[in-house]
Figure (cartoon, rainbow, N blue to C red):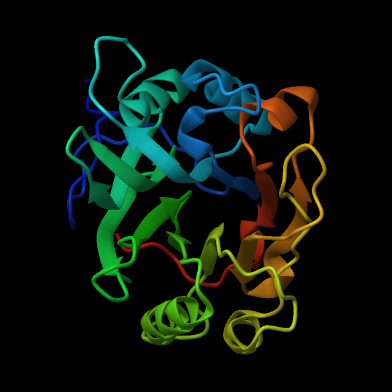
Length: 266
């Protein structure tokens, strides 16, 4: 795989990253998408269809959940590598479930140079599915941007534990450090204490409903941006293709980076 699209390992910074917008870029877009192992509502497994949805979204950064990297004879069997090459973007894998046949979990795709990569283990109990978060620093046209992408657990106690871990990691950075936190939070109760705690630190997230994709009424996926005044819009991407490609619709946020204060390290 070409250096621009290979997966980046822990704390690795590529010598050559995907070409980024020139310094002075004004707006960027970031998407979050639970791709459901690329299995659509028709029960057909189609990474190429997910790639088409990503092209519709037209984002600079994608946080993906439920990426299935099961080896196989087909060209698109390893989904992260396939999507990375299809989108011409660098791929950053997260902590994943290692199955007998392959790997499964979170990933990031980005067009921006990667400054650092860290991973947080959010696993809770030995009987529950392992969970994690990808924590990266990106150079966005000369501005530093921290992106934390995750997929939280199904039980309330599990999510409380995971949110405590995440919020502690977020608090380690100064409030003026531009930060995006996004992913499938599996929290359908809008007054949940976990969400209130996150809103205190990150500001309230705009959360249009995106699940289930054919008739969305639950807001499981969320995108927080700090500072909140940098948010231009957050929308669910509801096209005929997106409604079929996965059981979730993707969210797309547009961000005004001119409202960020922090510059990237030189």
